[in-house]
Image (cartoon, rainbow, N blue to C red; front, side, top):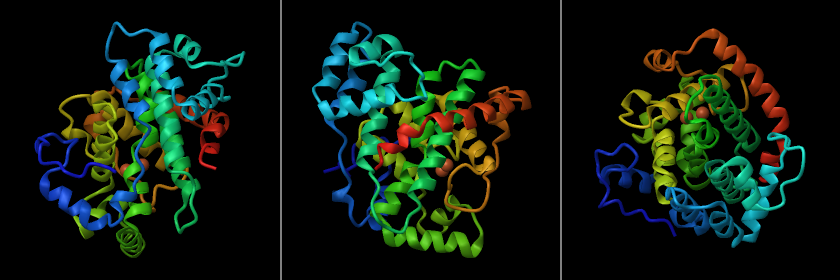
Length: 302
Ligand SMILES: [Fe+2]
Ligand SMILES: [Fe+2]
């Protein structure tokens, strides 16, 4: 069961919910107790890799304790997206080749895709995940082209930025249906419809989930501020990259962002990242090429 009590949360921390926001969230999410938990191993791994003395064998052993998780993680490691010439058969080897951060992020990705496996209901899963995957690839491409230190974390931030929409689609069905209706009738962004109707948005819902699931703080903040990057006081770079990658995919029409509009690029973010048309063009090419090779990611949903 997820912890919904945020009494101890610092209200000023953008990644945590105030008591009022918690009440708003509980009011729309009727089915809060049925939201799955993540395997405890995932949080353990993220905790372990913060210790500079940790080694690949130790982290490999933690992930390997959960056989299903290590199999899924290795499936992603060996996907065409990474293009290793030879199959990588165990997690320790994957860590040596790809690094701690990358492998722990892939374990997180595998767990989330598994927790949100496809279910029959009135929601465009394929479109949602295509937008998510496109944003992940865009974020990684942006980080690479900008020579950003966030290269290892950008993919997972892009992939999960809209996870709050999925939580609402599955666990706040009534509210989500009304939001979608309002999006169509008023032709507004989903974010605007959420705020107008419930004074809470998917970025907040996503950050709440990320916090409950003990995601690394950087990732929680990227989810929370992807539509409001100016509010970032720390981890700006990954938040800015997530903001741009989302809009880039919306502009390219990759997947389904839930509405018919394209959010505006924040000028301050554009300037701070020193973006230019050449970088965007390079990223666009990489997004299309990457999407083609990343099919294995979406297969974990079946
Ligand atoms: Fe969003
Ligand atoms: Fe998005």
